[in-house]
Image 1 (cartoon, one colour):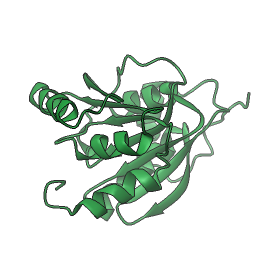
Image 2 (cartoon, helix red, strand yellow):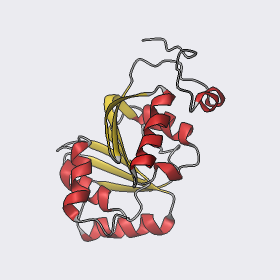
Image 3 (cartoon, helix red, strand yellow):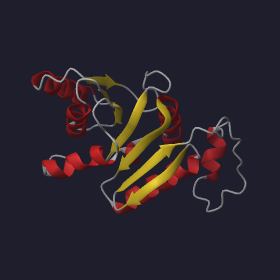
Image 4 (cartoon, helix red, strand yellow):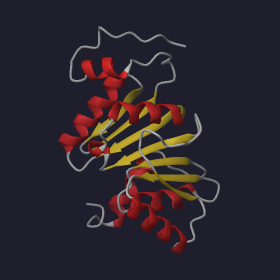
Amino acid sequence: MELIRPPWWREKWPERSGVRDGSEVLEEGFGFGTSPLIAARMAGPQGQVYALDLSPAGVIALWLRAKLYRLKNLRVILGDAKHTGLPDSSVDVGFIADAFHEFPDKPGTLRELHRVLRAGATLAVLEDTAGGAKKAAALVQESGLFALEQRDGNYARFRKEASVIDPLPEHHWVAQAGRSSRSTRTRTPV
C-alpha cells in the first residue's frame, strides 16, 4: 500500500507518533522503506533511525536508497522483530506500519519493543484496515506492557508502561488474549 499513497499521507504517521529532531526511532517490518526514509529526515542529524526487516532484498534496497539520499542517520537491520540487537531503553519511538499482522511471534515482538523503548516512549501501530488496527491494539493492550493513548481508524499509539517488573510468561499471555476481563492478572508497580 505504501507505494500508492501520496507522500503527505505517509509523512503524517511518523509525525503523529512523535518523531522529532533528535529522536531515536525503530521501525519494524518496513516493507519498501518509505517510512524510515521520512523518519530519518524528521529525526535529523542528531537523531537515529533503525529500520528492521526480515527480507534481505528489502534491506538491500533500503540501504541503497539511504546511500542515494545521503542519510547518515538511517541504520538498516536484517533481522527478526523479536531480536533487534539494540541496547535496552535506547529508543524514543517504535513504529510498525502495515506489518504487525504479519509478525508470527507477537508476544515476543512486544516484549522486545518494551525492552528497547525508553520509559514513557511511544509505540505506534498503523494497519491497512481499521479492523486490523483494532485487533493489533487489543493484542498490545492485552500484553500489559503498553498503555493505549490514542486509537482512531487504522492507527493506534501507546505509551511504554514503566511500572511492569514481571511480565506474564508467553503461555499465560497467549491464554489470556481475547478475554474481555483483565481481573485475573496483576501487575506489581516499581
